[in-house]
Length: 365
Image (cartoon, rainbow, N blue to C red; front, side, top):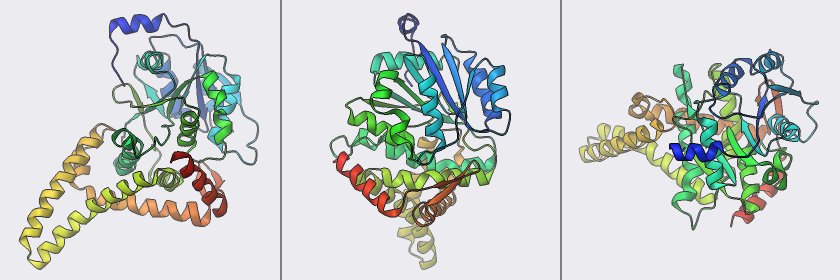
Protein backbone atom coordinates (compact mmCIF):
# COMPACT_ATOMS: atom_id res chain seq x y z
CA UNK A 1 0.00 0.00 0.00
CA UNK A 2 1.17 3.60 -0.59
CA UNK A 3 3.27 5.16 2.15
CA UNK A 4 2.02 8.16 4.13
CA UNK A 5 3.84 11.43 4.64
CA UNK A 6 3.11 13.88 7.48
CA UNK A 7 0.82 16.08 5.41
CA UNK A 8 -1.29 13.10 4.38
CA UNK A 9 -1.48 11.96 8.01
CA UNK A 10 -2.80 15.38 9.03
CA UNK A 11 -5.44 15.30 6.32
CA UNK A 12 -6.49 11.78 7.29
CA UNK A 13 -6.62 12.61 10.99
CA UNK A 14 -9.17 15.34 10.25
CA UNK A 15 -11.46 12.80 8.57
CA UNK A 16 -15.05 12.80 9.77
CA UNK A 17 -15.64 9.15 8.92
CA UNK A 18 -16.84 6.86 11.68
CA UNK A 19 -15.00 3.53 11.35
CA UNK A 20 -16.54 0.11 11.93
CA UNK A 21 -14.30 -2.95 11.77
CA UNK A 22 -16.14 -6.22 11.12
CA UNK A 23 -14.40 -9.53 11.80
CA UNK A 24 -16.14 -12.83 10.89
CA UNK A 25 -14.83 -15.53 13.21
CA UNK A 26 -15.37 -19.26 13.62
CA UNK A 27 -13.05 -20.94 16.14
CA UNK A 28 -10.48 -18.14 15.86
CA UNK A 29 -9.42 -17.53 19.48
CA UNK A 30 -5.69 -17.66 18.69
CA UNK A 31 -5.88 -15.48 15.60
CA UNK A 32 -8.18 -12.99 17.32
CA UNK A 33 -5.68 -12.34 20.12
CA UNK A 34 -3.13 -11.25 17.54
CA UNK A 35 -5.53 -9.23 15.38
CA UNK A 36 -7.30 -7.43 18.23
CA UNK A 37 -3.97 -6.75 19.92
CA UNK A 38 -2.73 -5.09 16.72
CA UNK A 39 -5.94 -3.03 16.48
CA UNK A 40 -5.36 -1.66 19.97
CA UNK A 41 -2.04 -0.19 18.76
CA UNK A 42 -3.48 1.75 15.80
CA UNK A 43 -2.66 5.44 15.46
CA UNK A 44 -6.23 6.46 14.57
CA UNK A 45 -9.30 5.76 16.73
CA UNK A 46 -11.76 3.12 15.60
CA UNK A 47 -15.37 3.73 16.60
CA UNK A 48 -16.32 0.08 16.93
CA UNK A 49 -14.89 -3.39 16.45
CA UNK A 50 -17.49 -6.07 15.80
CA UNK A 51 -16.55 -9.75 16.07
CA UNK A 52 -19.23 -11.93 14.52
CA UNK A 53 -19.04 -15.31 16.25
CA UNK A 54 -20.16 -17.95 13.77
CA UNK A 55 -21.04 -20.76 16.21
CA UNK A 56 -17.52 -21.20 17.58
CA UNK A 57 -16.86 -23.95 20.10
CA UNK A 58 -13.65 -22.39 21.44
CA UNK A 59 -13.05 -19.11 23.31
CA UNK A 60 -13.61 -16.80 20.35
CA UNK A 61 -16.27 -14.71 22.12
CA UNK A 62 -14.35 -14.47 25.40
CA UNK A 63 -11.19 -13.32 23.64
CA UNK A 64 -13.13 -10.71 21.67
CA UNK A 65 -14.85 -9.34 24.77
CA UNK A 66 -11.59 -9.21 26.72
CA UNK A 67 -10.14 -6.95 24.02
CA UNK A 68 -13.10 -4.57 24.09
CA UNK A 69 -14.80 -5.77 20.92
CA UNK A 70 -18.55 -6.05 20.47
CA UNK A 71 -19.62 -9.67 19.91
CA UNK A 72 -22.55 -10.75 17.76
CA UNK A 73 -23.80 -14.32 17.83
CA UNK A 74 -25.30 -15.12 14.45
CA UNK A 75 -28.42 -17.26 14.04
CA UNK A 76 -28.14 -20.75 12.58
CA UNK A 77 -26.86 -20.78 9.03
CA UNK A 78 -29.89 -20.80 6.70
CA UNK A 79 -30.09 -22.78 3.48
CA UNK A 80 -28.50 -20.96 0.58
CA UNK A 81 -25.92 -19.12 2.69
CA UNK A 82 -22.25 -19.85 3.38
CA UNK A 83 -20.74 -19.06 6.75
CA UNK A 84 -18.44 -16.12 6.02
CA UNK A 85 -21.02 -14.18 4.00
CA UNK A 86 -23.64 -14.85 6.70
CA UNK A 87 -21.32 -13.50 9.39
CA UNK A 88 -20.20 -10.45 7.37
CA UNK A 89 -23.78 -9.55 6.50
CA UNK A 90 -24.88 -9.58 10.14
CA UNK A 91 -21.81 -7.56 11.09
CA UNK A 92 -22.62 -4.94 8.46
CA UNK A 93 -26.25 -4.73 9.60
CA UNK A 94 -25.11 -4.09 13.17
CA UNK A 95 -22.36 -1.60 12.26
CA UNK A 96 -22.90 2.12 12.84
CA UNK A 97 -19.88 3.46 11.01
CA UNK A 98 -19.70 5.32 7.70
CA UNK A 99 -16.74 3.22 6.55
CA UNK A 100 -16.91 -0.55 6.87
CA UNK A 101 -13.60 -2.37 7.20
CA UNK A 102 -13.90 -6.15 6.83
CA UNK A 103 -10.92 -8.10 8.20
CA UNK A 104 -10.42 -11.86 8.27
CA UNK A 105 -9.53 -13.13 11.72
CA UNK A 106 -6.10 -14.36 10.57
CA UNK A 107 -5.07 -10.81 9.57
CA UNK A 108 -2.86 -8.60 11.76
CA UNK A 109 -1.76 -5.03 11.26
CA UNK A 110 1.20 -2.68 11.49
CA UNK A 111 0.37 0.27 13.76
CA UNK A 112 -0.41 2.70 10.91
CA UNK A 113 -2.41 0.22 8.81
CA UNK A 114 -5.86 1.68 9.54
CA UNK A 115 -4.49 5.19 8.95
CA UNK A 116 -3.12 3.99 5.62
CA UNK A 117 -6.42 2.37 4.67
CA UNK A 118 -8.34 5.49 5.59
CA UNK A 119 -6.10 7.75 3.54
CA UNK A 120 -6.20 5.36 0.57
CA UNK A 121 -9.99 5.35 0.68
CA UNK A 122 -10.14 9.16 0.85
CA UNK A 123 -7.84 9.35 -2.16
CA UNK A 124 -9.40 6.60 -4.31
CA UNK A 125 -12.98 5.97 -3.03
CA UNK A 126 -14.86 2.86 -4.16
CA UNK A 127 -13.80 -0.52 -2.76
CA UNK A 128 -10.28 -0.82 -1.34
CA UNK A 129 -9.06 -4.40 -1.37
CA UNK A 130 -5.76 -5.54 0.16
CA UNK A 131 -4.07 -8.91 -0.15
CA UNK A 132 -2.03 -9.22 3.08
CA UNK A 133 1.64 -10.19 3.15
CA UNK A 134 1.72 -13.94 3.88
CA UNK A 135 3.67 -14.75 7.06
CA UNK A 136 4.65 -18.43 7.42
CA UNK A 137 6.34 -20.26 10.29
CA UNK A 138 6.34 -23.97 9.46
CA UNK A 139 7.86 -25.51 6.34
CA UNK A 140 4.58 -27.01 5.10
CA UNK A 141 3.05 -23.53 4.96
CA UNK A 142 5.46 -22.73 2.12
CA UNK A 143 3.43 -25.13 -0.05
CA UNK A 144 1.01 -22.23 -0.56
CA UNK A 145 3.61 -20.55 -2.80
CA UNK A 146 2.07 -21.12 -6.21
CA UNK A 147 -1.49 -20.64 -4.97
CA UNK A 148 -0.52 -17.16 -3.81
CA UNK A 149 1.43 -16.44 -6.95
CA UNK A 150 -1.21 -17.61 -9.45
CA UNK A 151 -4.04 -15.91 -7.56
CA UNK A 152 -2.16 -12.61 -7.56
CA UNK A 153 -1.24 -12.97 -11.23
CA UNK A 154 -4.84 -13.70 -12.16
CA UNK A 155 -6.14 -10.71 -10.18
CA UNK A 156 -3.57 -8.30 -11.67
CA UNK A 157 -3.72 -9.33 -15.32
CA UNK A 158 -6.43 -6.69 -16.01
CA UNK A 159 -3.85 -4.02 -15.10
CA UNK A 160 -1.54 -5.34 -17.85
CA UNK A 161 -4.21 -6.02 -20.49
CA UNK A 162 -6.84 -3.37 -19.77
CA UNK A 163 -8.49 -3.58 -23.19
CA UNK A 164 -8.94 -7.35 -23.32
CA UNK A 165 -9.19 -8.58 -19.71
CA UNK A 166 -11.86 -7.18 -17.43
CA UNK A 167 -11.22 -6.78 -13.66
CA UNK A 168 -11.83 -10.05 -11.83
CA UNK A 169 -13.05 -8.81 -8.44
CA UNK A 170 -11.52 -8.19 -5.03
CA UNK A 171 -9.30 -9.81 -2.42
CA UNK A 172 -11.26 -10.92 0.64
CA UNK A 173 -9.02 -10.67 3.74
CA UNK A 174 -9.19 -6.86 3.92
CA UNK A 175 -11.96 -4.78 2.35
CA UNK A 176 -12.83 -1.11 2.91
CA UNK A 177 -15.92 0.61 1.53
CA UNK A 178 -18.58 3.15 2.41
CA UNK A 179 -21.69 1.62 3.95
CA UNK A 180 -23.83 3.36 1.32
CA UNK A 181 -21.92 1.62 -1.50
CA UNK A 182 -21.94 -1.70 0.35
CA UNK A 183 -25.70 -1.85 0.71
CA UNK A 184 -26.25 -0.39 -2.76
CA UNK A 185 -24.55 -3.44 -4.32
CA UNK A 186 -26.36 -5.85 -2.00
CA UNK A 187 -23.38 -6.52 0.27
CA UNK A 188 -22.69 -10.08 1.31
CA UNK A 189 -26.34 -10.95 0.87
CA UNK A 190 -25.78 -10.69 -2.88
CA UNK A 191 -22.96 -13.27 -2.69
CA UNK A 192 -24.45 -15.42 0.06
CA UNK A 193 -23.93 -18.77 -1.73
CA UNK A 194 -20.51 -18.08 -3.26
CA UNK A 195 -17.36 -19.82 -1.99
CA UNK A 196 -15.20 -16.98 -3.29
CA UNK A 197 -17.51 -14.25 -2.06
CA UNK A 198 -14.74 -11.65 -2.30
CA UNK A 199 -14.30 -12.00 -6.06
CA UNK A 200 -18.03 -11.89 -6.75
CA UNK A 201 -18.60 -9.00 -4.33
CA UNK A 202 -15.93 -7.03 -6.18
CA UNK A 203 -17.76 -7.71 -9.43
CA UNK A 204 -20.96 -6.31 -7.97
CA UNK A 205 -19.13 -3.08 -7.19
CA UNK A 206 -17.71 -2.92 -10.71
CA UNK A 207 -21.10 -3.59 -12.30
CA UNK A 208 -22.51 -0.63 -10.37
CA UNK A 209 -19.75 1.58 -11.70
CA UNK A 210 -17.95 1.70 -8.34
CA UNK A 211 -14.18 1.29 -8.77
CA UNK A 212 -12.23 -1.52 -7.12
CA UNK A 213 -8.62 -0.81 -6.13
CA UNK A 214 -6.25 -3.73 -5.42
CA UNK A 215 -3.17 -3.46 -3.23
CA UNK A 216 -0.51 -5.68 -1.69
CA UNK A 217 -0.17 -5.42 2.09
CA UNK A 218 3.63 -5.80 2.31
CA UNK A 219 4.91 -3.83 5.30
CA UNK A 220 1.42 -2.88 6.49
CA UNK A 221 -1.10 -5.73 6.58
CA UNK A 222 -0.20 -9.37 7.19
CA UNK A 223 -1.83 -12.75 7.65
CA UNK A 224 -0.95 -16.33 8.43
CA UNK A 225 -3.31 -18.47 6.40
CA UNK A 226 -2.98 -22.09 7.52
CA UNK A 227 -1.17 -22.38 10.87
CA UNK A 228 -2.73 -25.70 11.92
CA UNK A 229 -1.01 -28.13 9.60
CA UNK A 230 -0.98 -29.61 6.14
CA UNK A 231 -4.55 -30.90 6.29
CA UNK A 232 -5.91 -27.39 6.89
CA UNK A 233 -3.85 -26.07 3.98
CA UNK A 234 -5.13 -28.80 1.65
CA UNK A 235 -8.75 -28.23 2.70
CA UNK A 236 -8.41 -24.47 2.31
CA UNK A 237 -6.99 -24.50 -1.19
CA UNK A 238 -9.30 -27.35 -2.24
CA UNK A 239 -12.22 -25.15 -1.21
CA UNK A 240 -11.02 -22.09 -3.06
CA UNK A 241 -8.88 -22.75 -6.06
CA UNK A 242 -10.99 -24.48 -8.74
CA UNK A 243 -13.84 -22.04 -8.13
CA UNK A 244 -11.42 -19.15 -8.43
CA UNK A 245 -9.83 -20.44 -11.62
CA UNK A 246 -13.13 -20.84 -13.43
CA UNK A 247 -14.43 -17.52 -12.15
CA UNK A 248 -11.64 -15.75 -14.00
CA UNK A 249 -11.74 -14.24 -17.45
CA UNK A 250 -11.10 -17.03 -20.03
CA UNK A 251 -8.09 -15.20 -21.47
CA UNK A 252 -6.65 -14.69 -17.97
CA UNK A 253 -7.14 -18.39 -17.23
CA UNK A 254 -5.42 -19.29 -20.50
CA UNK A 255 -2.41 -17.09 -19.66
CA UNK A 256 -2.06 -18.68 -16.20
CA UNK A 257 -2.36 -22.22 -17.61
CA UNK A 258 0.22 -21.41 -20.29
CA UNK A 259 2.67 -20.02 -17.75
CA UNK A 260 2.33 -23.11 -15.52
CA UNK A 261 2.76 -25.39 -18.54
CA UNK A 262 6.00 -23.68 -19.63
CA UNK A 263 7.32 -23.72 -16.04
CA UNK A 264 6.76 -27.48 -15.82
CA UNK A 265 8.01 -28.31 -19.31
CA UNK A 266 11.38 -26.63 -18.77
CA UNK A 267 12.77 -29.10 -16.16
CA UNK A 268 11.27 -31.98 -18.13
CA UNK A 269 13.13 -30.85 -21.23
CA UNK A 270 16.35 -30.63 -19.19
CA UNK A 271 15.93 -34.25 -18.12
CA UNK A 272 15.07 -35.40 -21.65
CA UNK A 273 18.12 -33.55 -22.97
CA UNK A 274 20.43 -35.26 -20.48
CA UNK A 275 19.01 -38.69 -21.30
CA UNK A 276 19.22 -38.17 -25.07
CA UNK A 277 22.59 -36.40 -24.95
CA UNK A 278 21.09 -33.31 -26.63
CA UNK A 279 23.26 -30.72 -24.95
CA UNK A 280 21.84 -27.75 -26.80
CA UNK A 281 18.41 -28.60 -25.35
CA UNK A 282 20.01 -28.90 -21.89
CA UNK A 283 21.66 -25.47 -22.21
CA UNK A 284 18.51 -23.74 -23.48
CA UNK A 285 16.34 -25.42 -20.84
CA UNK A 286 18.84 -24.49 -18.12
CA UNK A 287 18.69 -20.83 -19.16
CA UNK A 288 14.90 -20.94 -19.15
CA UNK A 289 14.92 -22.66 -15.76
CA UNK A 290 17.07 -19.88 -14.33
CA UNK A 291 14.72 -17.30 -15.87
CA UNK A 292 11.61 -18.90 -14.33
CA UNK A 293 13.31 -19.39 -10.94
CA UNK A 294 14.36 -15.72 -10.86
CA UNK A 295 10.85 -14.64 -11.86
CA UNK A 296 9.27 -16.80 -9.16
CA UNK A 297 11.72 -15.58 -6.52
CA UNK A 298 11.02 -11.93 -7.40
CA UNK A 299 7.24 -12.40 -7.23
CA UNK A 300 7.10 -14.51 -4.07
CA UNK A 301 9.30 -12.09 -2.11
CA UNK A 302 6.57 -9.50 -2.58
CA UNK A 303 3.79 -11.82 -1.46
CA UNK A 304 5.21 -13.42 1.71
CA UNK A 305 8.28 -14.61 3.56
CA UNK A 306 8.97 -17.35 1.01
CA UNK A 307 12.64 -18.34 0.84
CA UNK A 308 14.87 -18.73 -2.20
CA UNK A 309 14.77 -22.54 -1.97
CA UNK A 310 11.19 -22.44 -3.28
CA UNK A 311 12.35 -20.74 -6.46
CA UNK A 312 15.37 -23.02 -6.86
CA UNK A 313 13.29 -26.18 -6.43
CA UNK A 314 10.09 -24.73 -7.85
CA UNK A 315 9.03 -27.86 -9.85
CA UNK A 316 8.27 -29.76 -6.60
CA UNK A 317 6.07 -26.93 -5.31
CA UNK A 318 4.42 -26.58 -8.70
CA UNK A 319 3.59 -30.32 -8.83
CA UNK A 320 1.94 -29.97 -5.40
CA UNK A 321 -0.06 -27.03 -6.74
CA UNK A 322 -1.23 -29.01 -9.77
CA UNK A 323 -2.22 -32.00 -7.58
CA UNK A 324 -4.32 -29.84 -5.26
CA UNK A 325 -5.83 -28.02 -8.22
CA UNK A 326 -7.10 -31.30 -9.68
CA UNK A 327 -8.28 -32.35 -6.22
CA UNK A 328 -10.19 -29.08 -6.07
CA UNK A 329 -11.70 -29.75 -9.49
CA UNK A 330 -12.87 -33.19 -8.34
CA UNK A 331 -14.47 -31.96 -5.12
CA UNK A 332 -15.94 -28.83 -6.70
CA UNK A 333 -17.35 -30.20 -9.95
CA UNK A 334 -17.79 -33.95 -9.32
CA UNK A 335 -18.61 -34.40 -5.62
CA UNK A 336 -20.00 -30.83 -5.49
CA UNK A 337 -19.02 -30.41 -1.86
CA UNK A 338 -15.97 -29.31 0.11
CA UNK A 339 -15.04 -29.28 3.78
CA UNK A 340 -13.95 -26.22 5.75
CA UNK A 341 -13.80 -25.63 9.52
CA UNK A 342 -15.84 -28.71 10.27
CA UNK A 343 -18.64 -27.84 7.84
CA UNK A 344 -19.63 -29.71 4.72
CA UNK A 345 -20.26 -27.03 2.12
CA UNK A 346 -22.69 -28.13 -0.59
CA UNK A 347 -22.04 -26.54 -3.97
CA UNK A 348 -24.45 -25.66 -6.73
CA UNK A 349 -25.54 -28.39 -9.11
CA UNK A 350 -23.60 -28.63 -12.35
CA UNK A 351 -26.38 -27.06 -14.47
CA UNK A 352 -26.59 -24.10 -12.09
CA UNK A 353 -22.79 -23.67 -12.22
CA UNK A 354 -22.80 -23.66 -16.04
CA UNK A 355 -25.65 -21.13 -16.11
CA UNK A 356 -23.81 -18.93 -13.59
CA UNK A 357 -20.57 -19.04 -15.60
CA UNK A 358 -22.40 -18.00 -18.79
CA UNK A 359 -23.93 -15.05 -16.94
CA UNK A 360 -20.52 -14.04 -15.56
CA UNK A 361 -18.78 -14.27 -18.93
CA UNK A 362 -21.58 -12.30 -20.65
CA UNK A 363 -21.30 -9.54 -18.05
CA UNK A 364 -17.52 -9.33 -18.43
CA UNK A 365 -17.47 -9.16 -22.24
